[in-house]
Image (cartoon, rainbow, N blue to C red; front, top):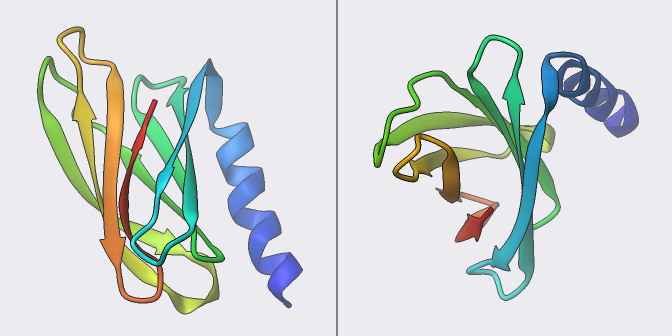
Length: 111
């Protein structure tokens, strides 16, 4: 069951994205390390994927602007949940994501 729960989000993540992507890692409040991946989609929005404390979480961001930020709820496998704020640089490109939630811990991933 857990395998099929990951297959659909990963398939949607891969097919909805264009070629522009970046990844990063950062410490998690649980004492481990979180990894993140950001991809620009064909429509100009971004897909964020974070793996933290054993959960795979994702969100879509649609309002990129220079030096802006955007908060979205995370959709996670295994019933976990949380939120992530994506920060944009002066060119409107993602520079970091700060996340937090029950059962996934919290932290920041820089791209």
